[in-house]
Structures are given as structure tokens and as C-alpha cells.
Length: 226
Length: 357
Image 1 (tube, rainbow over the protein chains, first blue to last red):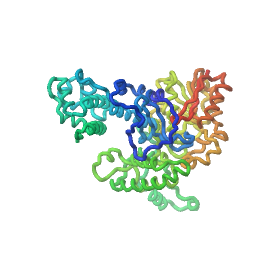
Image 2: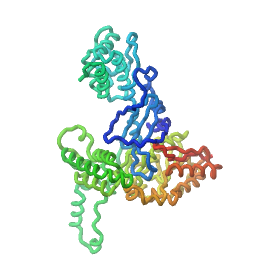
Image 3: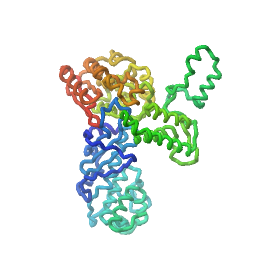
Image 4: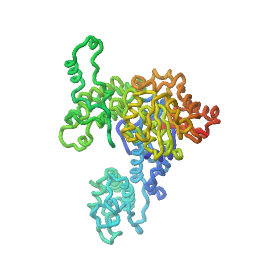
């Protein structure tokens, strides 16, 4: 199902590098040559792109391009690396048993990385949380309202969108979780309906989200969430 | 998905016991001394992941196996990859994880409940299998009896070419053709049936794939894969050489795809051991220049395809692709147009495509 649109958009770059996969899989790799991602207003909507559209912005290659491949090899490495041209973010997948599945896995990882690394500046005065953010908030929180639907967890592909919006807000208040909870509660209903504890638990529920928030907090001299 | 396998479920007795039992029970005859009692052929058994989980092992037993297998991989990997470009230690370690994945019952390995694990193969045989992987360079896919290809899990065994990651793209190329869903397609030299199954799953009412192969073993495996994906009404398997079994649909085909043997004969002895020593020469050796079969396919395509029909051939890459593309656009230019070279994901010009005028 995936490959047809993926193929249509993939650009075929030949591999000039002899880079090999790390011995232990490092699923999240940042390109050191990547442009600065902080508060890039134009770059905020990648997660709204379809898989096809997102692939159109990527260069895809496989590893170990030496040798003739094809029938010559028992199994040419079926690992896949996607380089997202606008941001320089690189996502790869190696552990799946077919190239097709490694491609889908790399794209999922790219979405997570985009959510974690690409920030949108927020105007706190006119701020209203987008529905994607409300969807990942704890189920008991009354600010979610009836029309938001059941809570979306980290395993849901839509979680990345909510995580991105939450991080935008946390970055706008320079890492303060209590401030974030206050804004979310206050702006929507005019009172504090989202507790700091509940928001902390949400942040801690996803490893990559926790790491990103804690990196920010550490850089601002705050103690990390545990 | 229903699993219908013509395999007889293997005796729970280990092969050694089974054969010694057989020897005890059989009456010695003069001829039996000259030909050893054959062990139960691994060919007759279903792939690992489809066998019933009739064996058990403790978690620590399996842990010991992993450690042993990894030590073998770490010791042999560098030597293997340096000698003929075979798998390195990192790939071998991933294969161990996949072997364990296929040999155990997934729920048990994840839940962490209890000390006993259910296995689809005896623990000792797991050791034997991995030793064969390292010492005989037996391809991993023949050991587990399957290859993951696109989103499919295809049965493979000795005697059938293991489908390659590059070839996954042929299915995408077909999916680009307007109206492919209702067309008549042919996959020549289908092997495990990989391309045919990939296409067959996308077809709609009226669409059909004729998958041909010369090898009875290949057709047997292809039949398993067709049945496993419930495509008997979409894919028709026919035995014969290239166009030979397709005379009744001559000039009617919407499209023609093939991954024919394309390795130049002189390269065959130098292939990595997994390929050269274990995979069928019939599926690899393309003659002196490697293009014997490709040229035959080019010549036959004009009469096999209907007007507007599509072809996609996999080649040895770059030079072969260019030669075939030139042939189709210059010598056979009256018959074909829109000839393209398509690179694989490693950047090698791997496929030639075009249309019948």
C-alpha cells in the first residue's frame, strides 16, 4: 500500500558516501549540517503533509551501495535513510525485514523528529490550543471538551501533531510546565483545570517528548522532570 | 487469512531419533547399505514461522542460544564480509533476532510471563540451523523458509531464488501504469511468485497474472505463496520457458514483467557463498554477457504485448540496462516507445521499462 505513493515521490539519489550503519541502531540521527530549526515559522506544517507529500521533500537512499547488487547479493542491506531536504533532518530504519517496511518505519520516525525539532513561534496573547493538542491531553481533563474524542496516546500516529503543538507552547514559556498547564487551563475555560502533575505525567509518558522537554529545562537552569 | 499447507506436520521426534527409529524398523536390504537412509528432508517442512509451537525451552536456554549465536556472528562476520562481501556481524546479529522471532511464539516472548517459552523448533535444532548459517553460509532465508518482501512474507526454499529488495520496485512500476488493475499481466520466470503476488494483490475484477517458470520447485513454492495470499483466482501458474506457455494470450497482454537470470556466466563462480553455493544457477546465470534471457524477452515482447502494453525488466544494472534500452528504442523502435531506465535505491540503473506502440 505504501510503496506506490512512496516510489512516485522518492528522488533517487546515488550514494557517494561509504557510511555504514552504526552497530547498534540509533533511530534518531540529526544532521549536523542542518540549518537552525529554532522557531522557524514557515517550517511548521510538515506534519500536516500526507505521506506522499512528505516523501516528495525527502531524498531516499539505501546503504552499502558498493557492488552490483540485485541477483549478485543474498541480501543487499534493506536499510533505508530518508533525508528531509527543508530541515536536514535524517531518519533511518534498518531493523525491519523488508525494504518496504523500513521505508514506512523511517517515515514514521521522520514525523516524530519533525515534531520534536521544528518549533513554531507562538503569540501567547492570542493563543488558542489546536485540537491536535487537546486530543493528547489526559482523558479526565475537563478542558478537552466533549467534541475532542478519546485521548490519543504515544503509539497513535496522530500523537506527533499534538506533541508538536505542546512543545511549541512549552518552548514559548521557556520550559515551565506549570505555566503551560496554567495557559492551557486558563485560556480555554478561564480557570486552572489542567494540573501541573497531570501535564507532567503526559510529558513523561513518551521518551522523546520527555528528553526534549528536559533538554530545554536544563538549558534554562530548571531541574528536569522525573 | 487461511493457511493451507500440503506439508505433513513434522514428527515431534528430532530428526536423529526419527531416522534411527526408521532404521530400527526397516528391514535391512542389500541396497539400503549403499544408500544411507535419508534424513527427513527439510524441504518438506513448512517455514519456521508456520510450524506449530510444539517445543519448549526456558528463557535462560534461549538466552544462552542467543549469546552463543552472537559470539559466532561476531567471530565470523568480519571474515565473511571481507572474503566475498557476505554478511557482516551487524547483519548477522539482526538475523539472529529474526530467527528467534520466527522460532518463538510472539506473545510469549513479549509478555514476560513464566519461564517456559514455546518454540516452533527444537532448541538443539536452532543451534544446528545457526551453525549451518555460519559454517555452510546457508542463506538465512532458506533457514527460516521465508523472506520478507514488500509487506509480504513469502515462502522460499532451496531451489528457488530468494527475492531481492531491489525487485520490490517492479510492483510499484506496474502500479504506475494506467488501467493496470483490470489488465492481463505476465510474470516470466516467477520463481517464488513474489512479483506475481505483489501485482495480484492490487488487481481488480477482470485483472489476472500469468506466472510462468521452468522449474517445478519454483512453481510449487509459488503455488504456496499464491494460496497463502488467497490469490488463486487472480494468478495462474504455468510451467514452461518464457513465452512458451503463453501462446493462447499472445498479443493480449497488458503488461510483461520479469527478473530473468542476468549474471554473466564468468561472474557466477565469484558470487558470495550464500548465492553461488546455495541458490539455483538456473535463476542466476544469464549466459556469457548475462543477457541471453533478456534478449529473448525483448524479442518476444513485441508479439506478446497488445498495443499500448507495458514491459518492465530487471537487469544487472547500468551497462545492461543501457544496452537493452538502446535495443528496444533503436532496433525495435518500430514496436516500442517511451523507453526508460529506472534506478534502484542504491542509484544503479536497474530496470528498463517501455510501451508497445
